[in-house]
Length: 177
Figure 1: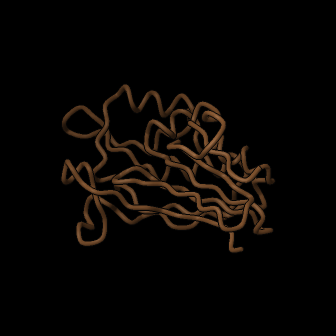
Figure 2: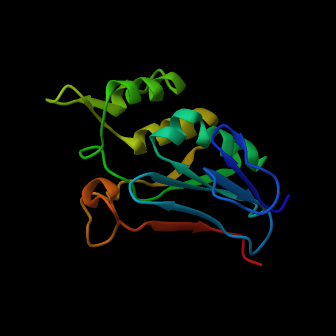
């Protein structure tokens, strides 16, 4: 398999690569790319260097199991993977409603600590904590990155929540030829 891209709920249509929630490859020189403006990009690589993957882990992707699907598609023992969490909206700026919180808790009932109630009757959510919990539950022990806030670091990152209409960051991973 040289490139497998898929929606969080399953494989995308066969054929040429197309927009999807995640992609994995074992082909040197083939790039897996994730575009984000507040959502969390998650990169994964096998210790052997033979497989890499990228997942678009916003709240919808997390709730749909994009991290779990990407780890599975890599076909590598989770203990032999390393993960990197890219820039995303931080927990002080990611406000969600109760319905989104419930959708995220369905996939990880123990994740209550990732949500802080606010004065508006909504919740502040921590995408980094949610992703780390899911990766750890799968057996991925080496998780790096996480903490750069797209909302507060306007000089470095695009943020849809901060700016409305905006550009996107590209997060890339590949195997050197």
